[in-house]
Length: 145
Image (cartoon, rainbow, N blue to C red; front, side, top):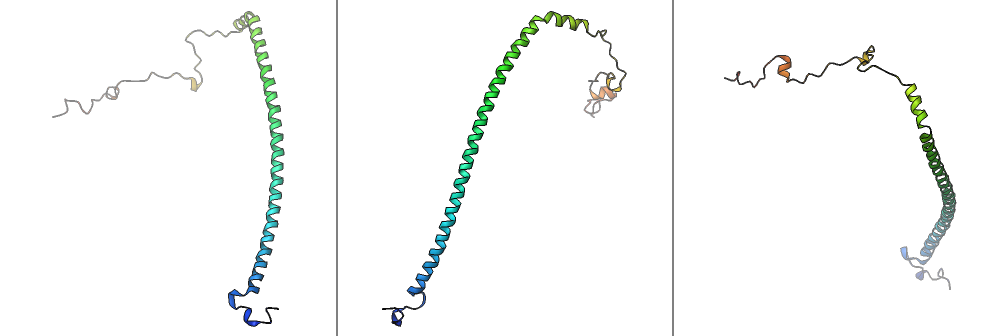
C-alpha cells in the first residue's frame, strides 16, 4: 500500500517523511562529496609528506658529506700549521736578518707633519675656566655682601 493512496498518513508541514528523506539524500550527497574531497586532500598531503621525507634524506646526506669535507679540511689545516711552525723555527734567523736589512730608520722625535691632518696639537688646558679666562668665580666670598 502506498502512502499516496492514504492522504491522511502523508503528514503535513515539516514532519513529512518524504521531505525528510529527500533532505537526508541531499545531505548524503554533500557528505559523500566532502568525503571524496577529503580523500583527495589526504592523498595530496601524503604525497607532499613523501616528497618532504625524500628532500630531508637528501639534505641529511649532504650534511654528512659536508661534515666529512670539514673534517678533512681541518686535518689539512692542522698539518699545514705544523709545517709552517717548523719552517718558522728553521728559517727564523734568516727572517730576522732580512727584517733587519730592510728596516726603516727614523730619528727619534722626528715626524713629518707637512700634511694638515698630521699637524701637531697643542696641549689641553686643564685649568679651571675662571683661571683660563681670567675671571673670578661667581661664588667668590668677596662678591657676597
